[in-house]
Length: 117
Figure 1 (cartoon, rainbow, N blue to C red):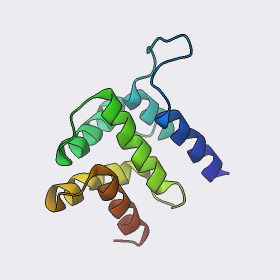
Figure 2: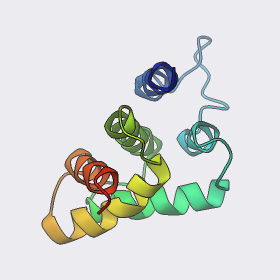
Figure 3: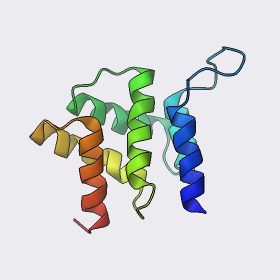
């Protein structure tokens, strides 16, 4: 059941940031991530960790990149019992020291956290 919910959330993040009427209000990827994370973290906490991870992978701080970042993190944690926020926190350490792309760093983090490392 969790995999189905995560899959739906991934589709939501991968989808266009506009509503069916073409507007973009209430489509802030950070606000969406806060909801996906069950409101366990504040908006500011999620934004800070997301932007830090994006900067470490030399990505610009845009809503599109924030959305793609969370899509990548959710895709890597879909089948693992790993907190997506923990993966996002890990990305700067991996991407910054290795030069990995954001998705590769997220995958490495998710695998390491899942393995207990």
